[in-house]
Length: 87
Image (cartoon, helix red, strand yellow):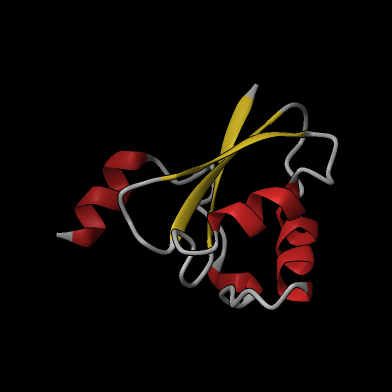
């Protein structure tokens, strides 16, 4: 079991619709809201498919960021470097 963060404008207000749409994907086990109003965490088994998830959410009218902005930092970026760059 793994998690993957996604951004959807107004995610907290649409969480039930988003959850229903993402449960159509067999790897999606749960969808949680987190502290930020436009962020969700998808709990999944196996490899994440964020491109397909976001495409499905666009299909039901959700506003999601452009593909280049919807990714978490690349694995090769070390957390220390990210924090140093943010300061």
